[in-house]
Length: 170
Image (cartoon, rainbow, N blue to C red):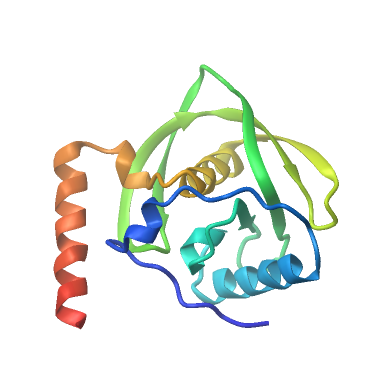
């Protein structure tokens, strides 16, 4: 397994809409393994392929708490097919926007269809943190960041800060 470099704001790749995965094969499963390794190393609880520079509709999640055995979840070509009217608010962060957190309101429960690691279609009913994490990562696949769900003023401040930091690294 290989730890991949993370794409960090303001990289325009983060705004790219990811393409559907055409086939589930050993190459894709190697990418899944690399993404899981990268996510665990970061450490994070979710990672979309675009965050490691691969514009494919693929994401991984693991909500296991520290000290628990890993419980990796893989979603290939995920699609939200139902969202509740009930809302929930979670403080979100993102590996592509390090050390910035904000409260985001999203549907409290969702239903997602996707393929698993062997290409079998799966339907996932999610609530709580899993629902929030899935929505956050699926947003990535559509070129949307969690900061797009906060006020324009706060979003512009975050983008400005990360743009300045990126310029200083050059």
